[in-house]
Image (cartoon, rainbow, N blue to C red; front, side, top):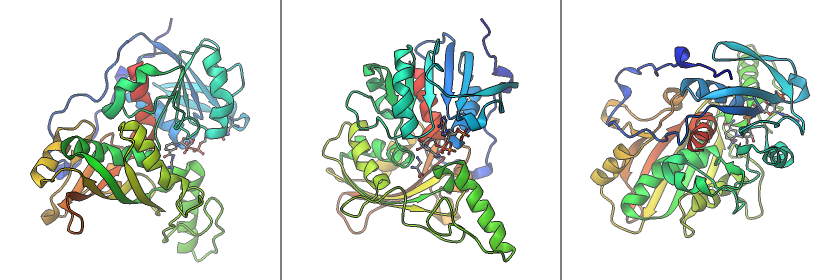
Length: 365
Ligand code: NAP
Ligand code: 2RA
C-alpha cells in the first residue's frame, strides 16, 4: 500500500515579525486517535475550500494511503498536486466512494444532501462543510477545540460549522468558560473567498475594471463589491435576519451545549480577499475582568491574543490569511452593558472556518 509521504513538504508558518503577542505554548488542538493511513476522498476538490484541504492535509502530514479528488464533470481530468504528485480530478458520481474511509465534502449543500448518503452506504465517514446537516441532531457539529468529545457520537456524518460561527466561537468559548456566556451582539466583516472561487475573481475583475475606467457588471453579488460593503450574506429570512446571521445562535447552541445562548448578528461582505473579522460584544452571567479574560484567551488552543492598541497591534485579515490560529484584540470592558466584554476576532475562514477544522475532525476519527 502506498502511503503518501508529505513530510518533505511539511512547512512551518513564516514568522510575522513582532506581531505574535501574548502567545503561550498551548497543547496541540487535536491529536490522532489512529495513525493508520486513510483512504480519503475530497468532494469539491477544485473549490476554494477543497484546494485548502489539500494544503492542510499536506502541512499536517495526515496519513493518506489513497486520495480521490472529486468535482463536477467540468473539472474531470484537471490535475491538482498533492505531496508533490499530480493527481487527476474525477467527476463525482454515486460510485465514487467505494473503498473510501473518510470523505471530506465541500461542494455545497445540495451535493452533500445527494451524495453523503451514498458515501456512508459505501462505508465512509463523511465530514461535511456545507450547512446541509449542521442542525440534524444525529450529526455532531464539531469544533475540536470546544467539543471534540461529541465527535464519537457520529452515525457516519459529522458537520463542520459555518465559518463565521467557528471563528467567533474560538474567542467566545474560552470567555464562556471563565464567566458564563449569556448572549452576544456581533457584526461580521466577511471576505469574498467565503463565497467561493468565483467571488474572488469577481472582486479582482471589478478592482481592475474600476481602475481602468471600465464598467462593471455584478454577477456573484447583487451589487458592486469592490470599494463597497454589502450588509447581506446568504438569503433573508422572515424577521429580517439572514440565514448566515442565525447560524451563530443555532450552531453556537449545539457546539457549546448551551441551549439558552442568544446571538444578534449583522453579517457584512467586505472587499477583502481572505479571512473574516467579527466585532463582538458578549454578555456574561458573572462579573468580568480584563485580566482573567486575557488569561482565558491566552490559555485556549487555536486562538492568540494580539492586543496592544498603543502600538497599533490588533488582528487584521491580511495578517490572519494563511494562519491556522484565530486572533483576538481590542479586548475591553464594554461601556454600555454590565458583565460584558467587547472585542475583535479575526480568522482565516478557509482554514479554521473550513479546511483546517474539517481535517482536525478527521484527525479525531
Ligand atoms: P467553490 O469555490 O465555489 O467550490 C465549489 C466546489 O464544488 C468546486 O470544487 C466545484 O467543482 C464543486 N462542485 C460544484 N458543483 C458540483 C457538482 N455538481 N458535482 C460535484 N462537484 C461540484 O466553493 P467553496 O467556497 O469551496 O465552498 C464549498 C462548500 O464549503 C460550500 O458548501 C460552502 O458553504 C462551504 N464553506 C465554504 C467556506 C469558504 O470560506 N469558502 C467556509 C466554510 C464552508 P467544479 O470546480 O468542477 O465546479
Ligand atoms: C460566507 N459563511 O462567508 C460563508 C462561507 N461558508 O459566505
